[in-house]
Length: 92
Image (tube, rainbow, N blue to C red; front, side):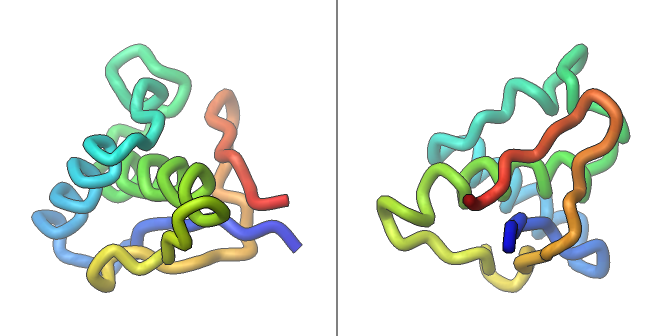
């Protein structure tokens, strides 16, 4: 069953922004959430955070044992968060 790492909608926005910045700084593919990217819309911190942590998690979980927690700002989901042109990579 596929799993995605997504940011919690009930988390503090400042914490979500820090998580987003951390994931992007640690090798997540954050180009899609930049202005003009396929995942820029919806333009919200929680949506951009989710894309970034999922990218980081999918790239790092198998090789570096990454978890989907990020200080309590993220959680694993079995529901695909992809929408429209924005496709989230998933675990195999």
